[in-house]
Each structure stands twice: as structure tokens, then as C-alpha cells.
Amino acid sequence: MADNVVTAAQLHERLVANPFNNWMGLKVLGLDEEKLEVGLTWREEMVSNPKARYTHGGIIGALIDVAADFAIAAKLGQPVPTVDMRVDYHRAAMPGDLRAVGRVIRMGGTFSVAEAMVYDGENRLIASGRGVYFTQPPKA
Amino acid sequence: MADNVVTAAQLHERLVANPFNNWMGLKVLGLDEEKLEVGLTWREEMVSNPKARYTHGGIIGALIDVAADFAIAAKLGQPVPTVDMRVDYHRAAMPGDLRAVGRVIRMGGTFSVAEAMVYDGENRLIASGRGVYFTQPPKA
Amino acid sequence: MADNVVTAAQLHERLVANPFNNWMGLKVLGLDEEKLEVGLTWREEMVSNPKARYTHGGIIGALIDVAADFAIAAKLGQPVPTVDMRVDYHRAAMPGDLRAVGRVIRMGGTFSVAEAMVYDGENRLIASGRGVYFTQPPKA
Amino acid sequence: MADNVVTAAQLHERLVANPFNNWMGLKVLGLDEEKLEVGLTWREEMVSNPKARYTHGGIIGALIDVAADFAIAAKLGQPVPTVDMRVDYHRAAMPGDLRAVGRVIRMGGTFSVAEAMVYDGENRLIASGRGVYFTQPPKA
Picture 1 (cartoon, chains in turn blue, orange, red, cyan):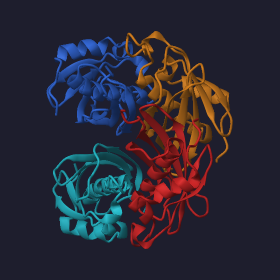
Picture 2 (spheres, chains in turn blue, purple, cyan, red):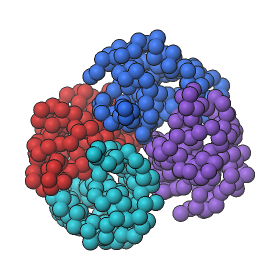
Picture 3 (tube, helix red, strand yellow):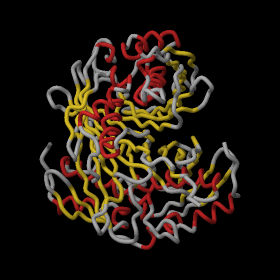
Picture 4 (cartoon, chains in turn purple, blue, cyan, orange):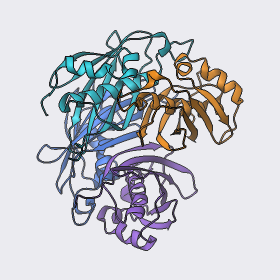
């Protein structure tokens, strides 16, 4: 696998320059050559069903997309367009912060694949997924 | 295909009882036996890349999930848990309201499949996707 | 949507030049600007569970991939590499020929999306799915 | 994660009782609590493009589905219905045997998620994917 080309601090700065990431309270929690950890700060507007009060699946999908995308960004220097993604929901996420672990599955010249797992505050697996990202360098 | 069991107004009421749906400014734009149309009201916090200013893929994924889920809800009376979903991104969504058209592909006893297409204000196809939803009735 | 650039007969010839397509007994049943129909000829080796005797999901996935890919091939002149695909299984396919209807969802410069629905001999929907295909022209 | 309830030999016996698995020359190569390895025996009919001669994507998708499904079967005693699956193609598979490594991501009461990675004879990652499987016990 390619080496990281940015630090955790640089990746965090890029992450929160994105208004919706910022609204989700995303932050880089950790970065090494194998994985990126991204935290999400729960807020009331993230609630789905008003009675059951679990977190909206769209928020969880967004977190997976970002964690997978920025796992690639750590290798390339910047986030890349998502071509498509898949999310599997394993368990309802009750109100509270979430943590995603993103990993690159395959770096390719034109498109690359990365995955992410989402955990709640008690380290239970909430959801997981993967996406294809467009990593072709711009034409000179 | 099963008949609708709720009106557009009832479905809208259920839709916006969900805080994150409400934050996205979702509204039922139309409902017939074949399809459900859901509108999304753009807001500044939905922006992804701060320079390119297109709408965050997580928002678009959430819209697809909701439109597909509520297309099923029209047949069953209430939204159902998402088992998994897939989103294909076709074109960047520039700032502005979006519209999703959800359709049921297959109603089943235990799980069902629905899809949604997302269009921008100029009716360009922005994204599309499908999900599996858990539609097994609760045990008596 | 782009016009077809090949005839049904030309597409069929290309389809069966592929040994595994040929083994599956695939044939072009129909082609217009909107859709491609591909037939599959059932054979004993396609059986999955030896008691229930339904057709193997891998065969059905292959049929979806081919029908979606060749729906694009009708527009481009030749099949293209599959980047990724999703298959939803709706109903067990009992022994017998199958029919897939492939449609392009979005033609793009670098990658394109197409879908296919699979029906049994009684026109019941057996499975459906979609894939991303790499449609970037080779560099000159 | 649940313990295995069958041996590798028992799982192999069940695997090849399936005619299409048998046609693909599938065999259990290894089984421990974490993963299942399944080998595929290449044959001429598996070829896709007659010139490039790489293995058909449908075969690779079938292998992923089987390896993921039987990773669950090791925990439950028998294979289960596939609800849906996703396959990412990373590299063309040239003629030759393949090896898949299947792992359970999440065992659930009603549905479960498993993944598989496919490698060629030189241990290059050819494809990977995941599926949802229906694991609800039959009603008494």
C-alpha cells in the first residue's frame, strides 16, 4: 500500500474545511499507514425516528463515505470524488458520538476502493460499507 | 404492486416527524401508485468541497434512502429499517434544491427492494440508488 | 440517451464470442434504443442447492452483469470492463430459461451505470441489479 | 463471533453437493474461526473476452458469493439464501485457479453480512465484495 503523504493534522484541516463534515462534527482521531479513524459528534438534528431516537441512516452513510474517502486522501493528499458506495446497517445507533475506521482496499490508477466500519461509544459495530473513488490524476 | 395505504399528506406528516429529514427540508411533492416524489431544500451546511460548493454525497445518499424507504411506507403505512443501500453518483449537485423519485422494485414478506433517482432543478439526473428494507411484520 | 451503434445481430455475435456467455447459452432476444433483452438457456450444471434445485445466484449475477454491460455495448460498439456491481435476489429461480432486460441509467465519459432485471419463464421478477462500467475511450 | 459448528471436511462436502459449485471446481482449502478459504479450478469455459482471455466477472462474483455464504455456513451448519451482494473488480484475472477468503462481518438474527476477497495464483487481489444473507431460523 502507498505511504501516507499528509499528517493527521493536515487531513483534519482538510476534513473540516467541508461545511457538511463540519456540521457533523467530524474530526480525525487517528491515522497510521493502515487506517484512518474519524469521530462524529452527535447532535439532536441527527435523530431519525422521533420515538426510537436512533441516528439517521443517512448520517451513518455519510460518515462511511467520508472515512473511506479520507483513507484514500491520506495516500493522495486530497479527497476524491465518490463513484458509488454501499452501506450495510448492522445495528441501530442510539444517541451518542460515533467512530469510523476507514481503510483502503485497493489503490488503482483510475479508481480505487476503500471501506469503513462504524462503531458506537461501546465499540459495537453499527454499520459498515465500501465505495469506489475516482483517483485518476487530472490531465496535464 | 400493492395499493397505497396512506395519502401524500399523511406520508408528509410522518416524513417530517423525523428530525434529520426535517433538517434537510424534505417534503412530499407527489404520490401515486407507481412513485413517490420527495423534495429537498438546499442549505449552506449541505456544501461539501468549499471551493467547488457541490452538495455533500452523504446528503444525496440520505435523500435516496428516504425516498426509497417512503415509497415502501406508502404501501405499508410506515417507514421501515434499511438493511443496506447502494448509491451511484452521476453528476455533481450544485447549490440548489433537489428532487427524488422513489419506486418499489419488489415488495416481499421479509425484505423489500426500492430505488430512487435524484434530479436537480434543471431535471438533470444527479444520482440514483437502491436499498433493501426490512418489511417483515412484527410478531404478534 | 445515445443512439445504438450496432444491430441486434452484431451484438449477439459479440456476445457469444465470449466462452462463458456461450456456456450460459446467452442470446440477444431484442434490442431497441431503450433496452436490450438477453436470454439464458438453462442447463443442469447451473443448479445450486441439489434438493431445492433453484438456479445458482452466481449465474443470475453473471446474467445481470452481461445484460447491463451489453446495454452499454449497444451504445458504444463493444462491451466494457465492469468496475463493480450489485445484485438483489427477489425470488428463487426454478429450473428453466431466464430473460434479462438491460438498460443504461447514465452514460458518462469515464464510467457509466446500467441496470438489468431478470425474469423467469412466467415473467416473474427473479432478480435485479446494476453496475458501474468503465467507458473511458482508450488514449490515442 | 460464533464458533464454527462444522469441520472443513463437512463444509467441503456440502459445498460440492451444489452442481454449479462443483462445475467451478470449488473446494474448501482451509477453515478456522476467523475465515474460510475456497479454491476455484479454472476451466476454459470460464473465459470472458476471447482475445484478452481473462476470467468472466460472473464467475468471480459467484466465487465471492459462495465464499461469503459458506463463511456463514461454518457458523450455522448450512448455507443460507443471498439477499443481495456487491462485487468490486480490482484487476483482470488471467487464466488460472483462484482462491477466495470469506469472513463474517456481522452475524444477526434475521440477516447477516459476510465478505470475501479473491486472489490469483500470485496472491494478487483480483476482486472483493460482500453480501447480505438471510439467517433467520425457520419458524417451528
